[in-house]
Length: 269
Ligand SMILES: [Zn+2]
Ligand SMILES: [Zn+2]
Image (cartoon, rainbow, N blue to C red; front, side, top):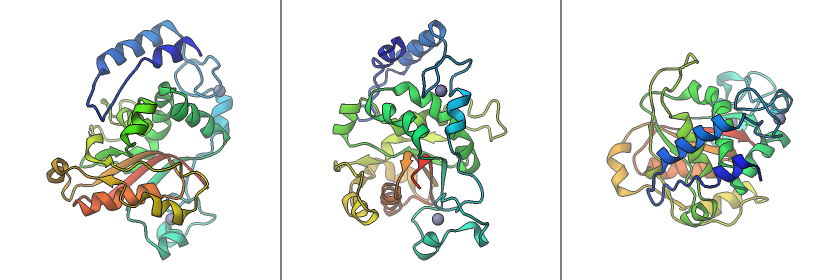
């Protein structure tokens, strides 16, 4: 374990407990950045600015046009209205999903340590890679909500990886160097809770995932007035079948929110 990882392992955030040590985290992060040169988020080689080295970046597979404008599936040709057959037959409960990269060996190498080995610092690599996709659909009225973890998983992992990405996407100045709008969207991780723990969904079919996830999310009563008819942007790290996003979107819609959009770092194809 590198010094950077040891220091990062002491950074603790918990939406569930409403504990905020952000100032301490910022001081620690600044100290690490000053003391240590940045490393590639995947292969740990020294680089000039935080992010990925050229070799690792070239292994990432961006999802770009032509793609389905609802579910972000790459299309072989440009279709009328840019909607894929699956979304035509069964329209998802979301208006637009944008996934920045395909889930492949490179993006997996960035995500697995982030989710399962405490590498919270990978959020600082992922968020800039996601900013372009985020900027294309975010509006000033959006409420930004990361897909929540169940409190037991949160205690085990110590942080919610999707919240860490979302927090950085909403951080002011929203867009200093890019041509995106200069506003700070409302970041509200407390507006959606995961009330039921689910087993690992890996290897399960779309139908099984849908069944497993039914009713696992809840909008707290205190969030109802704030979300009425407000557009919501969900943030997640991986979109597999879409079952998690769809269930979260349905829960928010039942509570009065809408329309619902989503931005994910990667998409399984
Ligand atoms: Zn690298
Ligand atoms: Zn689609």
